Length: 350
Image (cartoon, rainbow, N blue to C red; front, side, top):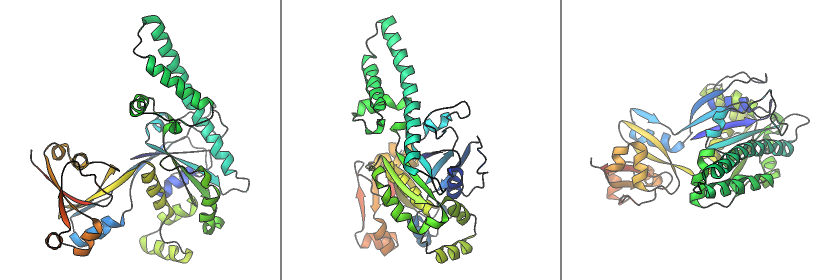
């Protein structure tokens, strides 16, 4: 999963990046630096399986984070800020919003950044519409007429100040648009970056801005980036003590990861054996044979059966022999739709 972090200058986006990644990148200097990190997705199920199996290796699912400049917070591009092209290749965007400063205006900032995304996509559309119109006129080639009409439909959507993710498109149209990597077609996670004084009110603040939430399109979470970055810099014992004092059950950045997963319709299935306990990321609804391909294409190609155990059943019975005796492990075919938390052993032959 690839997640791009965007925001106005000094909104705290690099602080949130540091909190998620455990890095210590410079903040508050209007830096044009690009920061990258691969972070492990916290998953108690992996930890619990590892306690039982005692594997040589434990591997969590991962997210690629990109913190890049390019948004002005003024609703338009300027010479000083240029959108980093890598942002367009992210699967989802995290929009960090200043909710900590005395004169902050979260709703206004959200709209301004969305306006910038719309303008950036309109520029891409204008260029491609012009190219296709010229090509059709010069060559008489009618094969691209449908694509041209689709691009015009997208332009009209943006012109009406509506996002492309809200456009009703069929599967073939969705496929046609993928190569353009439109910003407004990506799921969006809005992170309200709070002051330390507002941590206790995070739930109420999230409710206040709940109108922005659209299932599988836009999610919202409130956290204090400064405190989260301080937490991740502590050792395990100090972190536990600090969280206990503040009445925090888990770091808020874990919710960021969970909501990011939900936005993209992602789930994890698990494999457990002496060499390794591992979480594998797939899209919800993925069938067993395709899920096997995430591990290796040979397993997908030579797929025979999937031996599937629900995570809760695995934790109750703990060993393959006990699971089979209790009838909790079952064989599933290639069309079985894998569920979140399934513990799977693939049988294959190549």
